[in-house]
Amino acid sequence: NGDDLLRPLESCISDAERFKGAATLELTCTCGAHFTFGGIQESPSYSVTFSGIHCNGCGTELSSLRITSQLERLIRKHISLYYAGWVECDDVSCGVHTRQVSVYGKRCIGNTGRSVGCKGVISYVYTDRELYNQLLYLESLFDVDKARRQELRPLQDDRDDKSSPDSGEMKKGISQSTLDALAEQNRDTFRAFQSVVQKYFEQCGRRYVDMASLFNFS
Ligand SMILES: [Zn+2]
Ligand SMILES: [Zn+2]
Image (cartoon, rainbow, N blue to C red; front, side, top):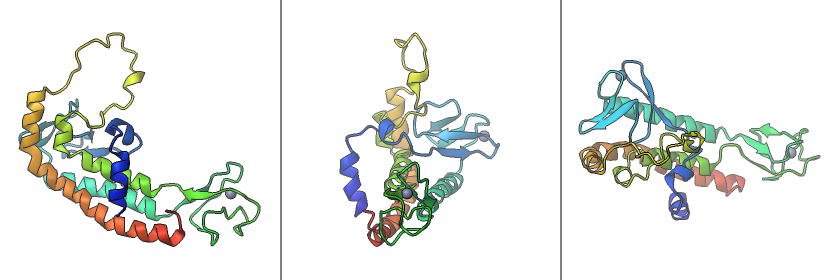
């Protein structure tokens, strides 16, 4: 299936690079605080402890149900974005942005909608690859082994923008021994969150193959 095809190709890219464009998982606490959850790593807004994910604002542990429902909401949003099937023309002077797929496949339907007047090629605005990458990213957030190896996408993508002169300063973060312990303590609960994502992988993996073959976009 598509999942198996994509994984090996991308396995040599770092998560920081691979998931740069992926939407972050925003969690909202019962106290109303919002924060970006980036897995087991240093954050001013949340802490992962032996008993799960805690809001730093109020100290409350976020329930599994709360995390799962916010995770699923984000996944469904991206799946519907993909299935909305928006396509656009690669010719900037044409500017066709439509949900209508021409009988000529990848050929632009043009402004008349009759496949005349434009030599551009249309493609999905939100691609199957982006959807897969989004799901992979969300799955990675709960990968405790990646967290131990400090391979997660950093919470701040644009570290280079920070023009701090003391780059030789010790990198702040969670110590390796604490990371190791947190990984083991949260392994089972985090695996349950990963299985939420995996359920959607299977579901849209099948449909995505159907859609790709239907429109000959694969
Ligand atoms: Zn809170
Ligand atoms: Zn066009």
